[in-house]
Image 1 (tube, rainbow over the protein chains, first blue to last red):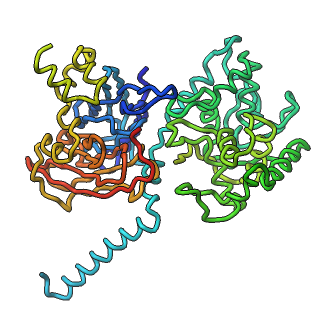
Image 2: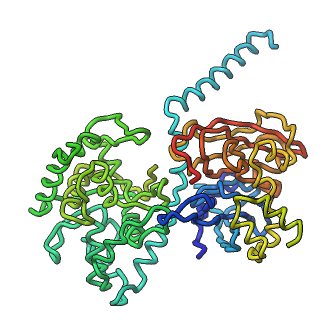
Image 3: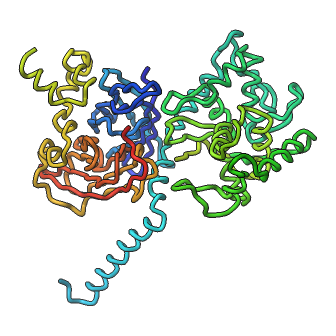
Length: 106
Length: 269
Length: 155
């Protein structure tokens, strides 16, 4: 069920500009479907980003984060070829991990 | 409180800079948001999906779309969308990308045409349809290339003229033609900017940014959807999916937009 | 059902499905996550309660926090917000949409090797101030910016 993310990591000096696009319904639990029934709460609660295996960003989200979420961050002390890994976990226990390599400055 | 001239000048400059920055947003208060959203477009996630669907063996015939001819030969995708719509001898008609996809999904994969049409436009907030993902993937293979359709075949020319006629023809209970909304600069409906399509730059923007991620729907939308929705907005009878009328309008717009550099997925409100 | 669980369920009120999931232990693989997740903060309905849950009551406004967000958002369901904190030793950034039903939208622990910068997209129900609550060097600071919403993004 968990769909792949798209991770872009580009070097700017010694900082990696990381941009992550995710696919997730991020349901608020307030929306009604076509039949008039409430669509249950279903959202990403945690996103963890690692740099060469070390956790660099730990986030907690609420259902107020948009559907098909985006996350942008800037990782210090990065080099081209470094590994960026992103893991999200949602309130149903679904999770997804994707990786990318830091690209050299364009 | 600085008393030197230099100090005062510094404060004045700082105030002007802040005021200038504030003024810039108030000139176009929607611009910052639009730019931030377009820079990272969730629509890009549909490209991989479309690629997988293209190569996957599907349908009653358990075949992929790798042999589908989009005008440059079976399976040749690079630059194909830049030359659509065009005349196809095997179907003896002018077809746009989605119409051609339908042809291949039916002939190569054995899908039922009505079934595909029924689900071609996905519900807002869904995972999107296979057609939407495929249309985006195939068009992305023309990214960076210029729209370059020709009207050398008689039927291509006829489609262009029919599309032109439809663009300017007032009809229905609102007495609207496309021209009413898209014939002048700086028009909008509430917050929605209306592209000036009788202007070269405007129509080039249109033809180079579809399929696009429609932010409010959270899915990728196609040109067929866009035209269908316009007809709905105009309270005209339903524009049927991949109909001759829709292909005619697309032919007209693409020819007007020739030279535009394709860059998909676009990002729409 | 013990008193704690009854109290917990009452507290979570509208967050029905989530509460039920916690109560019945369905969020099993995220048990550690559930323990860490700032439930009190995310379920607070008032800005003051959110600030309290973050430990940020009495935070000072700081010009070293920049909020990049549109003056007017075309779609309240997708409002881009970027926070840049120039405060030395920035440890944590939270984004709060004051007039949302549950104002706390996200908390980022930035103490591990990233710059004091995050960018995300939020749902906003109505025109409201967006607050950045930043923990730097053990102390709390805030900044805010009004974002006008034309079409609300919650339902």
